[in-house]
Length: 92
Image 1 (cartoon, helix red, strand yellow):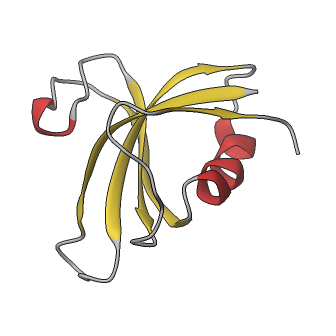
Image 2: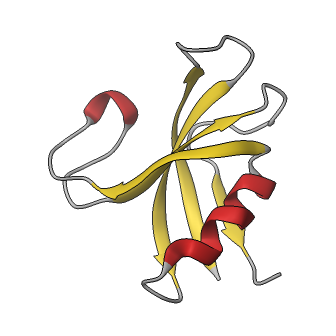
Image 3: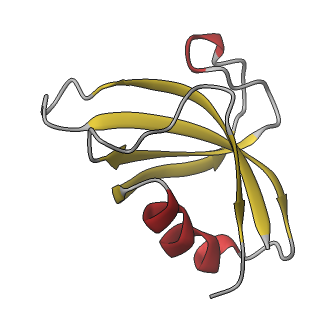
């Protein structure tokens, strides 16, 4: 189980047919997040996880604070997500 909160959504600068979604990982059952990524892609209509990291500095433009564990992904434009929305990911 894991939960994410969406902190930023914007049109992809590389390809206008996709949105770039940033989400902070609020909780995860294990420190190995490899199982979270496929679930996040599915729940967010994601296509590709671009980055997953622990923020070394404030990234206020995307709603990430120093020490936050976050992920950024390309998503289909009809993902239906909103900034501030929390997503719970179960074990599939």
